[in-house]
Length: 201
Image (cartoon, rainbow, N blue to C red):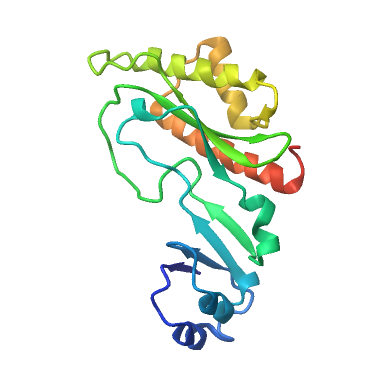
């Protein structure tokens, strides 16, 4: 069950949910809920969903590395039943879009010493709107993403999706904007799954 915002008083939430939904997890969006709401639902039944992606008005404004999450390290100690995010996307869905002046790949990775998760933005060097060669821009962004795999101290986990970027770079295979988005989402899900299961260390 998804609760968007928690404007209802805790007593109303308790009366609506008490005993009616056994073995139900409550996905809480819209910020950290009040302690009374968590108590009414049972904190171990709650999954906190956070919007961790900082959206920029255009791709050329994405720069370098940003902290993403450490919830995989703390959610259980905090008492939650789980945690979630919107991957390398914003919680606000945006349909369509114009041809980008720059191509960006948003990939999460973890630090090997302290396994917090960061997000890195790999942006094409070519950023002129008049340059409509998307294939070239994608190759530039992919080359930067693949080069980061050799960086000491960090790990992209070599997920199946990350390997697709590596293969595309090696074989100079064209990658569409849609494939890029699918791969970056799949990479994040696989990375977080690997961190939780101990597959990535």
